[in-house]
Image (cartoon, rainbow, N blue to C red; front, side, top):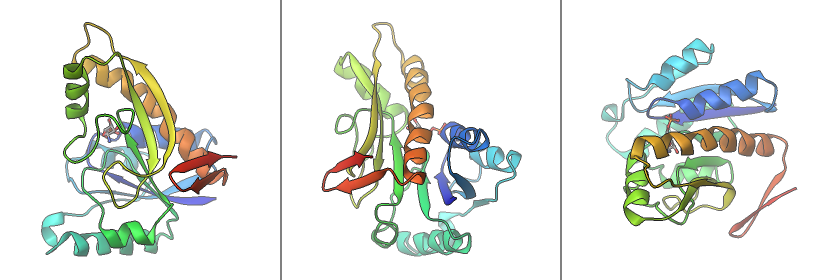
Length: 205
Ligand code: GRF
């Protein structure tokens, strides 16, 4: 049984998808701790409703990103967390954090990386850029996290059609539905030890 820790900043619908899949027995893992950097993140309520330990840790209580990340590590170690999932977490992880959990941090991004990603490109902004660019296909990507932003080895991707009359809201909703399938699937594969990282590639056994 893999101990999972989840970092959130917002509504937590991806967190909810993981909670639901664990409850259904689809994932050989358990969420031990949910941490948010935002006090008002509805994901904290979702965790509480599911009986999962949750913490709001305020960045303002720390003097640096490194110190903040040391606190995150301390709390995840307390729960003996093995796999870290970024489910709409909007802060950048410190080098120490990425080093410590190398190959064990999974992130979900609402586009087909390497398109529409990188610094400052998250949440609704991603869909805004997709619509402005005129592409016909977007999608969702689940990847391992490395020192870059949205640059780690890709685990799973799924395409989503962009419709002519799409707004940010309609497109976001269609992509979220795919995210809610893809992220639990990637976590399932990790927990079944079916993922191996070979350079830039992730092999699925
Ligand atoms: C999702 O679109 C995810 O791809 C992005 O942030 C959003 C989080 O949504 N990283 P939620 O908090 O899981 O509902």
